[in-house]
Image 1 (tube, rainbow, N blue to C red):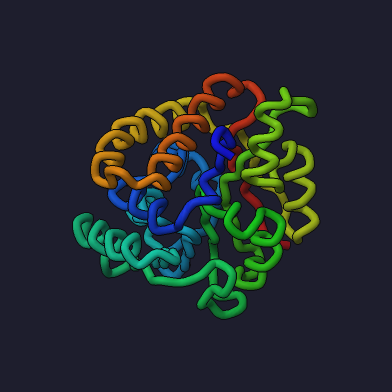
Image 2 (cartoon, helix red, strand yellow; image 1 turned 120 degrees about the vertical axis):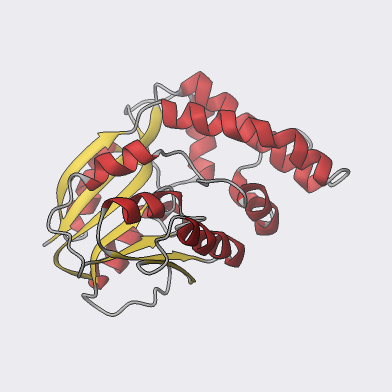
Length: 256
């Protein structure tokens, strides 16, 4: 249908990855918020191992590398992201401890109880919050931590326009109490749960807006790209209109 609004998940992955390939972060977030979440994690040493699942080009991974003595493995399905990840680690002289590998979050290359911390900013939705928490748990040592961001409803009732958009884009979106209950059911003690500031979204959309027209020109005449750009603009428009009703939460849990 001509006027139908599409979500990002309905587009060719090559278009999505191309659009986000040269960005420091592929979703809302900031170094300050990564550090805040990290402050809830105890006991990390030079012998600890962290996995950053759905790491993208590694914006948050580099922050973890600069602020912990741990070995860090970033995992992403897109090879170009991993290439840039490893270049970033080299630039920051972290390459001895911080490494990106191509892999799928549905089949992670870790042994059971190998990891001290699992990190995932803006990525667990690809597998689903409940499934990710449940399936990844076996890779954590007893007492190990998981820290993820997740799009979450702030209220029980929402306007139909935003309800319909996110129900289509991410059916697992839910309220804060339900997300905490899901974490507990998956076998974690919830350690911290908090709303990320509005600025992570405004900064994200402002940065994205600078890339929209150049991306259209790069793919001049490509109707799918035109629809993709329209979808990104619509998502941003909805955020500014309905930001009181939803946003990113950090959920930090400890394996029990």
